[in-house]
Length: 307
Image (cartoon, rainbow, N blue to C red):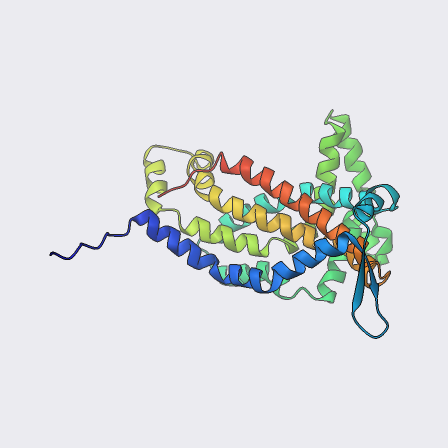
């Protein structure tokens, strides 16, 4: 009998295996370390946790009382959650497009390109208290709190009578809607945070831009496409799959550093209310997952995959 020929593995099958191997370390870490904590968080949210004097804890089932109290009885949770979602809706589009713009500039060949790239990535590496304080001062200045700075800064910046209120009145007189002005002013007040949160996204977009075949730009140039047309017809469609990655990372990073996380931490470790803290964590996690699902589904329908 002739030996049966081995069935060759298809390209799709090989890519599937490579994708699985890529996420395998994360999957092992999730099952080994995170899954148990997630189950315990759900259990705590449905219970009243009491820490024993000699160590350990005891649980008393309370059903959904913690969830009811979080939305009906707690004084600040709904406001903090709404503020965190609103800030995320402002930050994510701005961080995404700012990162893409800076990546396009840093992808060009010029002297000192490596140094400039490192400077944009430094806030991610050196996220120290000094940098945070400096950015807080800059944010206060941009919010119009120039009086909180030194007299030299006040004389140099505010001496001419120009302030954010002046520009708001000027643009309002042009008939721009207040919702647009609120969005723009919110973006301006967060410019330091946007720069600080864009390091990883810029690296992702640089990798995406470098993976675009140069022949596509050559064809666009031969066809007489302008720089504007080349961006929308070549660059933007080719980086769309990476935009999904950037948006997912930015949404999660935004909620990780949001006020609702600080509220959950304070409730657990300062007020010793672990059940309510777990409820805050679960609600914020569900909201994050819902936003990710809607955003990714919206972008994925408009994403072009180049093979």
